[in-house]
Length: 360
Ligand SMILES: *Cc1c(COP(=O)(O)O)cnc(C)c1O
Image (tube, protein in one colour):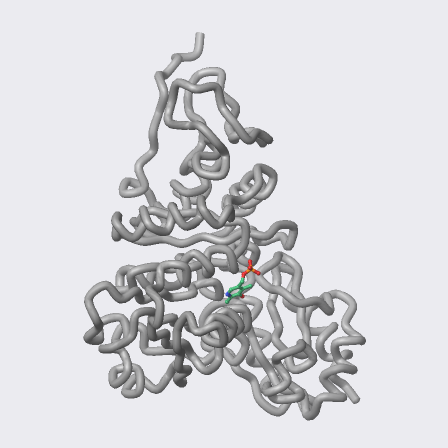
């Protein structure tokens, strides 16, 4: 007879991150499945704290929050998309608040700031993310400091260690959008950020088959306010998305390792290619932005790729790329700029595809 153990709870602090990703948050008792099932439900029989899915959801949701929170030694909240998570942060702002954001950052954040300012809800200012002195100058009277590093799409790197420790107003919120690097490559909460944000649509999910977002914080009062905002804005994730996100997350460590090794090699080769004017690669992660010699050549390359997919978004196992200036609202970007999300295919196949696409 096998020995039957009672219920087991694994602790993040006892485990390497890679082990936590694979093993954290699973049901762990005799006769239990190894993964939480998909539970399509809106309401629960009265008698416990679990009442309604917009606020309390189900065990798979708790497991995903436990695994994500464990990565950052923090508490995590999951949302229906990255933008839903971002909206709950902006939802915290008092009337007339002052917002700082990078001059290059995710376009949805910039549009949120612009639309709210147009309605008189707040004022905002955009600063170069690598101009630490400018941030030091403006930070003391800002209510929300929104940072992203490396930035999307120009891959500019901020000195987060310094920015997160600058003098700030009490009650202000400093957020780092950590979508491009994930907690495996950068831990902004350890540097002093109040909140980290992830579009789990990207690397965390990893398979381009879902939309999701997450926030993590070590500040319990702020966590409570963000949770309340999620409930009231109605931005809870669906049962299928939670299942898929948790399933994708199990392989995050190996996907990040393979894609990053591919990106290092491809960034070096792109730098030598006659069809490429500039390569922007921060040396970590698997996002590369490079400039084809002009917009027409960039369009041509995007139309010729076969292994790499010509599509927006990023962070999937499959490589994808697009000319960012072709996106409405992104016309200010260099015309030939291609944002390239390096995937987990064999590097030589990705390179052969790129090479044939970039040759005149
Ligand atoms: C995609 C993305 C977002 C928005 O996330 P959605 O899941 O699409 O709502 C925010 N920040 C960055 C850096 C992104 O790449």
